[in-house]
Image 1 (tube, rainbow, N blue to C red):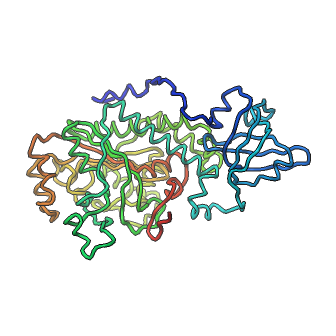
Image 2: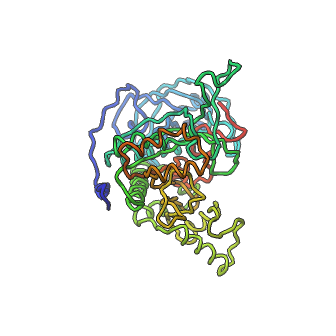
Image 3: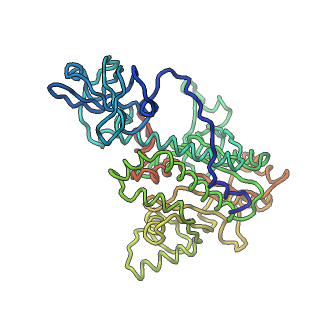
Amino acid sequence: MNRFNILKLTQKVNYSTAKSILRNKTIKTLLKEDSTNVAVRGWVRSVRKQKQISFATINDGSNLKGIQAILSSEDAEKLTTGACVELHGSLIPSPGREQTKELKVDGLKVLGECDVKRHTTEFLRSIGHLRMRGNTGSAVLRIRNAASEGLRDFFRDQEFIMTNTPILTSHDCEGGGEVFKVSPIDTTNPQEFFKKSVYLTVSGQLHAEITASAMSRVYTFGPVFRAEESLTSRHLAEFWMLEAEIAFIDDLAPLLDVTEASVQQTTRHVLETCGEDLDFFNQWVDKSLLERLHKSVDKPFIRMTYTEAIDVLQKAQSRDKTKFQFPTIWGSSLQSEHERYLASDYCSQPVFVTDYPSELKPFYMRANPDGKTVGCFDLLLPGIGEIVGGSMREERYKVLEQKMKHAKMNMEEYQWYLDLRKYGSAPHGGYGIGFERLLLWFTGLENVREVIPMPRWVGNCKY
């Protein structure tokens, strides 16, 4: 596909299966074995009490459906939904279609009682410490884990180096000012600790560029923070970002190839490892989920320039009488409504929009020869909008210096960034994936607060 030999991504890699060092086996593992005298530990999802014999569903988080336990009515009276239990017994064939085995209980111990109540989905959003016990919450966590595995597998296969960028920084990468300032609690002068203003990072990009200047291909994956007073379904104050930087590329094409391949391989990994959870979301959340995911890995993503996108939006307004709240003139920002139209209605599949006007983008993006645009892109997904943003980085010292002065930046504070262009500069580019937005793609859920264990947004920071 490109110089990074991405075609090898279709090849399957066989790894030896490591034996668990933990004595307690998960329900997922037990269901694959023929065992007697087993112990099952988990939480009660449901109890059906009958006169002679009762049934309970137990789940430890290792799979979606858990295991059905058969127990006496006397033992069933000790159980409530949500209680933590330890059951001993034998695995026997199950006559039902849901699973091949069930647990015939010989002994029961309640490890943690639960005062059971039924709650709405809206209320569960406010009790993040408990909502993972439900099917939706646990399925999200398993898909979240698989997606992070898929991303790491991709970058390992492509010989990227994992690097750790700082959480505390002395700069605002994007230049938007939406940062959280850090200061000690017990001091009359907050700046005394670091002798300067320090912030929670909004992006690891500039630090990743330092590493890429020595290691060629690097990526970082961690939390970032934005002080955006936004209550939309796509914004959080704390979220996770995967950011990659690649040296020795001199145009957008290979950068788009790598971005597309990383999203597609991660999607394949989730499809291969989370079939049960994806079926659940396809049944209860988005009935087009599986079709959409399979389509995204079978076809190449569409690519269009910002100028072409504006033309599409303007024609939609005049021809189809599509009503947009925000303007669609050249030089205006693409809003969520525009992104959704392009990806969902016009393309009906993932689409790259490239080469935005320079006035809309940060100082570090490489100027195009036309003098009006920069070499950058956003990846838009149907139903979601933007989930990836990236660009070629300005590697020319004089051009970058002039852009920084034009932006009225503190030149002394950013001299180190200019130095990267002074000592052995190389053409390079990179991109960042909003991990929670990627999870919306994998689950069909509509709000990023549903796909992170403890969401933080303006006015809310619980736990």
